[in-house]
Length: 158
Image (cartoon, rainbow, N blue to C red; front, top):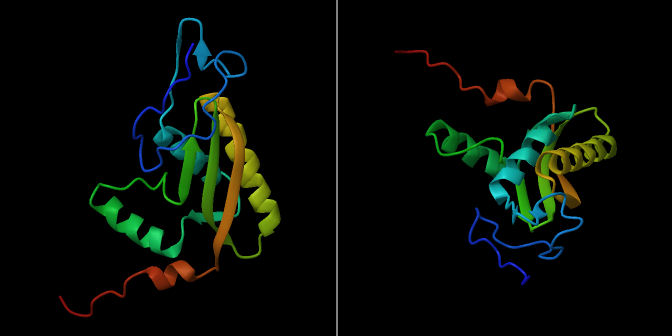
């Protein structure tokens, strides 16, 4: 059987991690009766939700991406589950980069490891893809009271 080509553009990331492994070791994605292709956007959502499940994670994405994400979500274009997450998906493997804001006082190495473990478990359990790597970038710390500064000041006049 000839190696399959990438499945066109499936989101902003169309590249493949490893376009190898027909049959065995593909976690049931390649069978004698057909194959299953998983879009980048599916893996991105799984990784984003998994990262948010970890205690100590305040938000995903950098400051600029959170600001743009907030605007696009208000007009119905954005999906907060994919904010701060980028993936590369092959036929049998996936690699993930995630940017997070951690709650002040949490152990950054411990939270990063928990994020990595949770994303790997969720991707492998839900999609059947093997997570080859999960890179965690801590972009900021969230301090108690920071949310109060984000709230707009109420108008004094109507």
